[in-house]
Structure formats: C-alpha cells, structure tokens
Image (tube, rainbow, N blue to C red; front, side, top):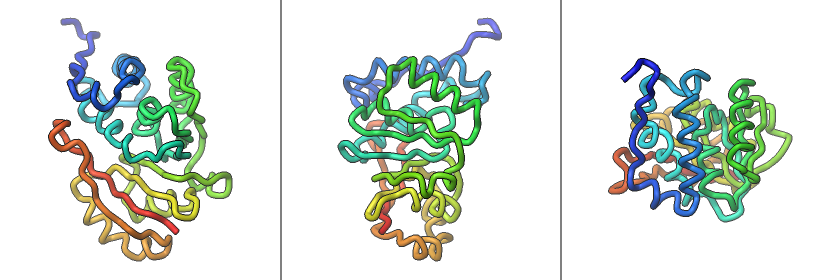
Length: 213
C-alpha cells in the first residue's frame, strides 16, 4: 500500500435497503467524497474507513421521515450530510442546502451537476440570512451546534406547523433540557427523540423531532 491510497469502508449491505433504486447515485457520491473529501477539508483523514457507517447511511436513514414532496432546508450542509444524501435518496422532495463556506458550496454545486440532481438548490450563507427569504416544510441539520443555538436558526425557516429533524448525539436529552426557554420562545412542541436504524445499521441515528407553530 502506498501513502496515497485511500482505504474506504466496504459498502454495508444495509445501503441497498435504505437507498433502493437510488443506490448507484449514492455510490457515486460516496466515491467522490472518499477520494476528494479530505483534500477539500470536507472530512477528516480518519473518515474514509467509516464513510458509509458514520456519514452516508447515518444521513440516509433519515429519508423515511422526509414527507412526500416536502420542501426541506438543510442547515450547514458541509460536504453533503445530511442534505445532499437525502436529496439523492428522496428525489420527490425539494432541498435547499444552506452552507456559508464558498469552497463547500462549490463542491455541493459540482456534485449536484455530476449526479444529475434536479431537486437541489445550494444557498450560500448562514441560516439566519434566509429567515425572510423562504419557508419550508422541514428543516434538517447534522453536527451543527447545540439545540439552544440551533433552534433559533432553524425554526424561522419553517412554515407554521413545520417540522424539525435534527440529527444529534448521545447527549441530546441534555441539550433539550438546556434549551427549555428557547423551545418555548420559538413555539417548539411535540418533541421526541427517535432512534433510527436499530438492527439495520452498526450505529443508530438519533433524531430530535418536533413541530413549530
């Protein structure tokens, strides 16, 4: 093995079940991210050997919670998780990928073109810059910030009765507790923590799910 070779995680069997007839497109994105993600600063040097488990499928497992034909905004998309992955798996829904960094937006736009995605619009900027620009049915985010800071960014993007789908870690309940006042201020209710991928993925995905009205 040479120093330039990249060891990429073997595609888990669950990928076919999760992606269905969109698997080939998802594979193409995974290959692009594995080969170019580290040089572009999208993923760290330790990520290719766990690319599918920790990043691709951790994002794609959220797809069943995206409503049919929904308009979705993804905050801080970065290298494409979860927004671009979801756009691949759910071509029926429309996605706005919000990302402030120019080079990441360039990568996202390139992937949209290379993968032939017609349901994606990349929006360069911070979430708060778009609070009066549009409304969506659902907002997603992954590894952005704690709920007490994330909810004020995400909630104003939603239409009345819209839904938050925020991927979180083990400490999500502590984040909920710390954001109690913020939740009331932004009229967040029907809150739940959902575990996705149990028995299917090596690592389950935690989702903070709530409505805003």
